[in-house]
Image (cartoon, rainbow, N blue to C red; front, side):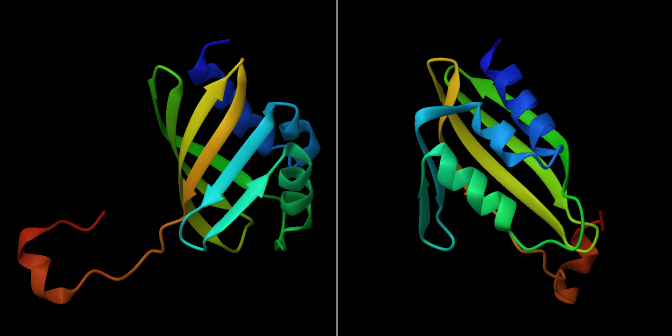
Length: 124
């Protein structure tokens, strides 16, 4: 599999909500960083347990909006929902030995655009 295909498989497997199956795509030395909350998750077991225990209103869905590959680095833009929450996740994934070795995820918060700039922008 190409590095891009590894990440496509990652998000496809995330959509099954079987996070221990997702763990099989992760490197033995896996690291996930969440800079916004200052947290680091080490190892596939911690990744799988955390995601399994994560509070949700329903099944998680993952819609891959964009993917870009540059060597061992793959960047994805994914819309995530549990049926109630609607979030966006930007993930920088580094591949090593055919597995996901390190991920850095950014979960940006949506906000209402200020009215003062309405004359120069379009609503999307």
